[in-house]
Length: 282
Image 1 (cartoon, rainbow, N blue to C red):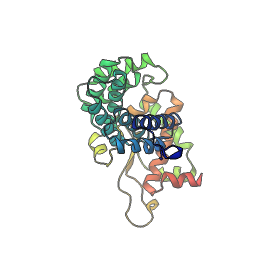
Image 2 (tube, helix red, strand yellow):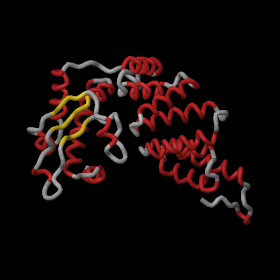
Image 3 (cartoon, rainbow, N blue to C red):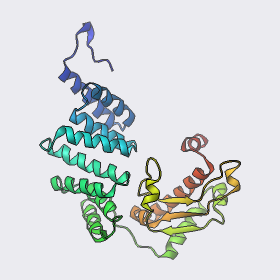
Image 4 (cartoon, rainbow, N blue to C red):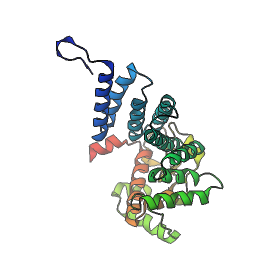
């Protein structure tokens, strides 16, 4: 964006940077994540090690779902700011880094970032929550994970409800309810396909995808769609629903809705239907 003023005068570097940062913040306030990225990248083209610009870039990338890009930007921010930088921003950057590393399935690194953030700002509920998510997937850390989830719940009970325990019969009832609400074609697609109730996804499977799948994924189909012909002529071997992730949604009706969404999107994924194509049909 052209930062020159009328009459050919140019704004000094400090003022130009301040104006660009202000535009980035306004874009973030409006949830215009792509706009924020474009604005902040202009600033970083001129000043690659600008700490606040790197922080805001990381925040926008994380919102866009680019966990790897956010991870790198947070790390660059922390390096540029140094250990003596603004404490609140450092705590926020470490918290964001914990989320990004978790989404990249880098669990031990996520734990380290979360603990470093909480050492500065112990009342960050989201950071306690993501610390728990990472810990519960590391062997031998279940009890520590529970304590982190309790801490997050105490700080924000609505955002971080404690999981409800359901019996296998109750899970099957929720699956049946979710399936009954699917469109007829999708319900027919899943007819005869076993639904497996599994606690959490396999981490190696998540890492095998580029970029990695989030560890909080609700479900995945098993099998390989046919490379040629009509994919609807073959069906998945099974579909796994990850009850450990689903249970963290709290209310039963929310879980039923998410099961339905998972079955819908996994069917679309198998059939090669994109989210954009679904939106066009809606």
